[in-house]
Image 1 (tube, helix red, strand yellow):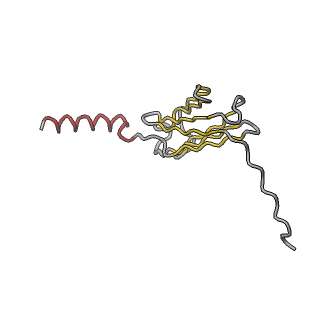
Image 2 (cartoon, one colour):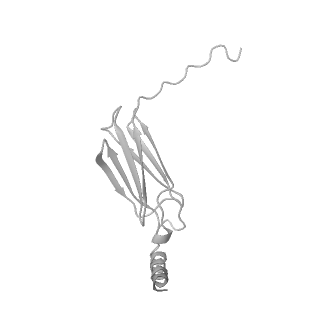
Length: 129
C-alpha cells in the first residue's frame, strides 16, 4: 500500500512537469554537401505545443570535437526542427555527428562519414530514336 502511494505521487509529479510526456526525437536525418560544405539537419519531433515542448538544442561534432551547439526556444513546426550549417573544416573522410536534444527529456544522435560525391550517371545512348 505504501509503495503504491509513492508510485502514484511520483507519476503525478512527472505528469505535472511534462517529463512523462517528453520524448526524444523520433528521427534525425542529416545530409552534407562536400561541394559547398553545407550540412542540413532535420529532427523529427512531434509536439502539441512547440513553444513548450521542442528540440531545444542541436549539437554538431566534427571528428569527435564539438563544433556547433545551437540553442532553440521553440520549434518551427509541430513535427520538425531544422537547421542548415556551413562546415568549412569538413573534408572527405571526416565524421560528422549530430545530436538533437528535446528541451524536456531525451536525445538522438546520428553520425555520417563524409564521402566523395558520386558522379551523375551518363545519359542513356539511343533513347528517343
